[in-house]
Image 1 (tube, rainbow over the protein chains, first blue to last red):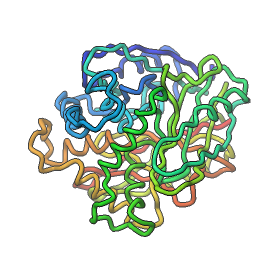
Image 2: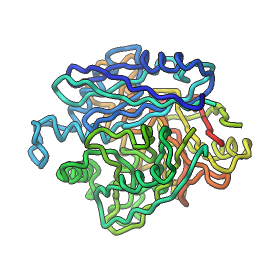
Image 3: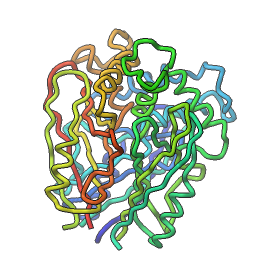
Length: 139
Length: 139
Length: 139
């Protein structure tokens, strides 16, 4: 096998970070490879990907709050407001973070540091089912 | 074939987003692969890459305006101003977005969500010819 | 050979950008490949990766200053302050930049533009040994 693909769905319940490390790890383990590269790609422009600390939940809460302060829903200059005050802010927050992230696989595991985890960063206020395409490059 | 490469040039006419989805799709189609991973890498530090909504042009206009408000040309503390007020701001805007983006290829197509497109984000005021290196990993 | 991996360590001495282009180039040259894709992944959530101009050192100094102004240590609303005022700010600065970056390899060299270099962006005030996992995809 040279490569493998899988699409995972991450349910969200409003703005914030939702960890999907376990789903990504499971995909790697199912392929039974030892060395490779996992790429995660989120198929949306109002949610994004980040790797962050998964030990203290205050980190992801603070991160979400920072973006709420940086990209204000109360600003009135946005042209694109079709879906409400969290519409354009979601696109901006996505552009400021990542759409794709690549993680090397070493000895059959994602080469994460001790407290690293992969998160979907939801920028919309309402619940969504976010699709993340995974691609695994093997030998 | 295991991999393929191509360099595309995206002409820009001042600050803003310039879609290059069609050029990336064409490269994938020319290789005739079904499953793989496309990586786009912009060979500049004053322009960057983003994946954004390509349905409503207000999105990319608002995105450009947001970065203009966040990284102000009127700030006087920049040391690096050799090429004018949009010089250092361009480097900062690039750092806040992406230099490389990877997109899985599924059934011969980029695995984009419905309204996703790939854009060069030009941060300089004057026109440029921006070079994007494409790399396609296949079987 | 289909792929190669290496972990490099980048010593840092407080906030700022530390170039590691030479270490990445050496890894590519040691593998003796001509075409491929190098992925760099930083195994931390309080330091990140950026590609920036490596000609004028004012660029990286200004970039560091911008992030200091954008993500203020003097803000009092952060919940996560266990390791001091530069703790949560480091996570935010990391999220605003990159955890992984992919660079095509062309004719045995990283396909950088003229003044591009790869940097570890240290966000903590104290010195660290930052680990960057490199993955090289070949034929």
